[in-house]
Amino acid sequence: MTKNMASMEGRCGTALPFDLWREALDRDYALGCRQPRGAAFASAISMDWIGGLKVADVRMPPQTLSPQGRQRVEEDVLMVKMIVEGEAVFERDGEQCRFGAGGLVIVDPAQPFLEHVVEHAKLLVVSCPKQALRERGYRYRLNRWVAPDTSSPDVRLVQDMIRLIATHSPVLNEEMRTRLGYQLLDLMDVIIREDMAAPAETTRLKVKHYIAQNLGDTALDAAKIAAAVNLSTGHLNRLFAAEDSSLMRFVWNRRLDLAREMLAAPRWRGQSIEAIAWRCGFVSAAHFSRMFKERYGVTPRQMRMLPP
Image 1 (cartoon, rainbow, N blue to C red):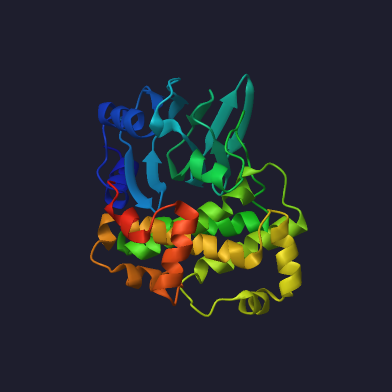
Image 2: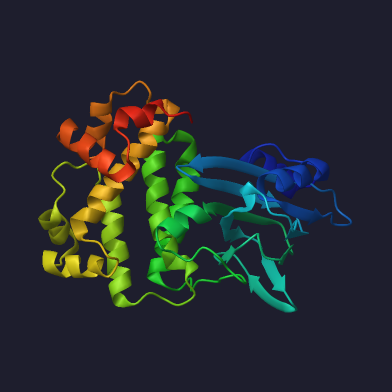
């Protein structure tokens, strides 16, 4: 094993020979891999779940990856790939785009492409469920890769968040994982769309980010949000009216979404429904139950009894 491969093993789990690596790519990402010639092969991957997102720290030698060309449930994602070290070239229909360290690219594994890793590389890969993107009104299908402008402060913020999540995921508790997953999904629109956001869209995303960070604050109201982002409540409501919503309706819906996920998660079985409601920013269990049933058609207790 070369020095580079040995360092992979120490930093990113057990180094995998080609056969096991190919099996892992097929099973977890529906990707095929062409075995490179020459030097000994060893790749390494470490995966974790952050809410509904799969985040992987991947280290690999030169090779070529491509979708397997078959539809499976696991493929119903967009993959956000951030190149931390090394270089990769993406190719489709004769068109190529090269990404070095600091580069960011989003691909749809339902579409054909080639990914040539041209030197030993480290990538952070986030798998985003298309259903979650679609529910947010975001773009969820790609005909080709998307290469966000990494000079944009908004894009760099998303990159920093991905990096921080990947670094700290082993020690995060379940509540923090859930919240970070929601926050990262909310910010995906910044990098998935090809054109930079209009000012109103950018402002709305920043407001949503603040809300996601403070959902558990029972005092979170329109005035507090407006003060935090230095805008009037009237202006914020106009921003959310463009999404057929209002500022506080968005807050309550996100609180309910978080509560539903916690009620369905085995890790929260030991918490009472009242405690979960409080963690999600509700001060009244009766108010929480009434809003929950209006939104989902079942009570919180009935939701908890549903099979996983």
